Amino acid sequence: MPWLPLLLTRAVRSADLKRWNKLLGDRLYPGQQLFVTERPPRPADEVRAQALSTIMRRAHVSQPEASYYLDEHGGGTDVEAALKAFAADATGSDQGALPLDGGEGEWVVVDAPP
Image (cartoon, rainbow, N blue to C red; front, top):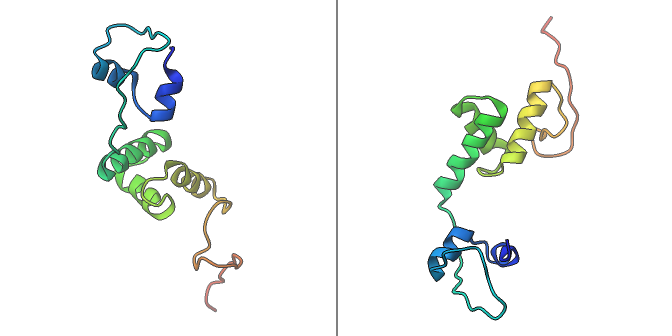
């Protein structure tokens, strides 16, 4: 695709570029002028819905569970951080998990009362 560098630097889709410039094919020519604009950012609720869908699909979890991991570990939109926390919980590992108080510490086993 001859316009790949343009698409990557401007964050636009080839379909948008074709529509804005009434292009029928995929060919560009040296010196050809094109109209390019930035795509508007996606709404936050759309980004969150996509993140939840990705977590549900990749981790095979329900929407409430995906929402928990996304909110508690992914900052509301970071799918990879949420999935990493889920994987740590699923394997029983505390690697990648955050300390409860947010500071330095260690994990201890609490004994049953006498």
